[in-house]
Amino acid sequence: MKPTIFIAILALFCAPYSAVAQSKVETSKKELSGGSSSSSGNTATSRKSSDEDGDDDADPENVSLFVDITLGIFRYGLIGKYSTEDHLYNNLSAYPYCTELTGNFDEVEPETKYRFRVDVKDNFLYRNSDLFANHLAVKVRPHHAFHLDADYYHIFEQQTATGNHDLALYYFNFGYDRLRMAQLNLGWTIGMSYVGSGVDRGGFSFGFNGEMFLPANISLLASTKWSWINSKPVHAYDLGVRYHIKRFFVNGGFEKQVIASQHYNFLSLGGGVYF
Picture 1 (tube, helix red, strand yellow):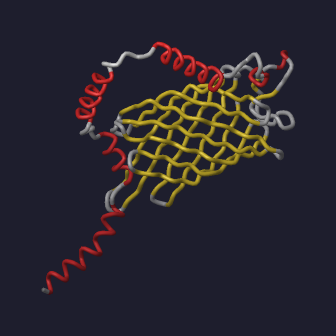
Picture 2 (tube, rainbow, N blue to C red; picture 1 turned 30 degrees about the horizontal axis):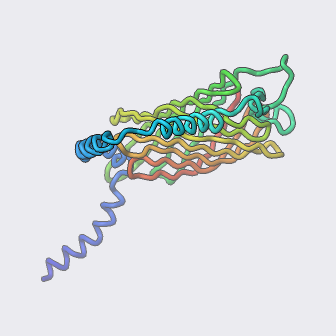
Picture 3 (tube, rainbow, N blue to C red; picture 1 turned 90 degrees about the vertical axis):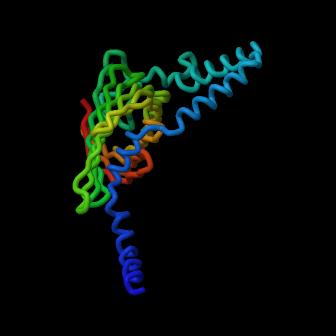
């Protein structure tokens, strides 16, 4: 009886330690690398379903309506109507607040247009002394309407029981600014994600981002990037406040990554420059 009680007490003490000792980073990597057990079943089910649906001929009028709606959403919702939306012609500014209450876009004379700009930022992300990360982002703006984005996250985890672990996450996206106002820009991105560190897999990604410019050289920004690798989520969220000092800025806020079943919540602090 006594040995049984001793083992039960020992188990109670060891259980929480085991939960804490388990590496979040290694769990994410293992889940992203694992195979999908239900893929064959889902494929067979979808094939059967498509065969059954194929028996019914599609109504040409319904197909035409669906195409018109889809094209309308894409044109007016995602691209915009240049004939009626004057803000779509706003030019890219040299840098935010280069003039009073000017954000990323401004109405300027043709001879002072800026058609190319590179925005670089680097944030240190902190959860605790055992879990922290770095986020380097480069946004290349070759034209006032679109930009090319590259984001590099490197997450570090230190544990006494299991040692040090790290995970590298990349996003490469094409971005389009749907709203180009002097005090507000809002747009979408589309591209791919990639997880290194032994996982070495990529996936499709898309998201949204925006920035609002307030008085006193302060702006509020938010962005989301959604992706899936091996049917597991690989998402990134960013919410922050930025203070602009001519071509430089400092920022702080909150960043979160969802990698497979693991959630990484960080406070962020960093800065950057506009070239």
